[in-house]
Image 1 (cartoon, rainbow, N blue to C red):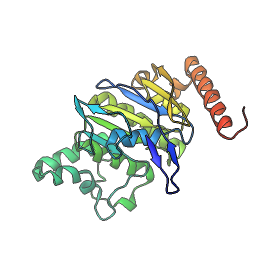
Image 2 (cartoon, one colour):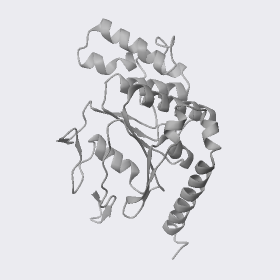
Image 3 (tube, helix red, strand yellow):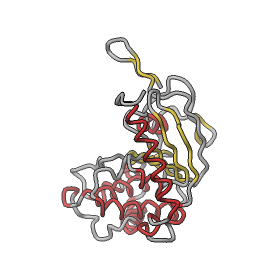
Length: 255
């Protein structure tokens, strides 16, 4: 992906990025600022068309946004004038789904994301973490084949973030959805990725790939126990060092 700037110069945001994803996988993508993580996610979502190459899903090319690819943004991007129930049911309503069917589905999703009894609340009455739960439920209401998450937990406090990490793993386990998650947190990438891609900048590219057991373990054990796993600590230190060296190179502190 190459962007042309107003002054006529160009920036090569991504180069030779190639990957495939199996149905039901959960993939985390990590890297320093400016490595093209969000650009890659926007291409997968269909918001951007790559300068060269192609994205395909279920055997057909991705040429724009579609319900099969759900997006959860860093901020909930909820409709402030609607209550929580109407936010979650917005997609089915736009598709003309029967009201009674939508109501039942919304009730189920409120239960799934831990917001039973909050359906009639206004958006401003909910905390940031609760709003992200609504955003996730709204995404699930459209029955996407794949859920794309762009730093969905980045604005949350540490405790809420940990709870939401557990919720994402729960939904992954219970629904079998394919999930791609962008994050700046090494711990989060390790916890939530069966596979983890570390990207490098200038141009953005896949630097290293890991196959990890922690997401699966996280569906069975407390996430705090997973963090005590010796392999978890070793991988965290390895990746932190890798990204730190990239950051130093970006800042010109390394030849």
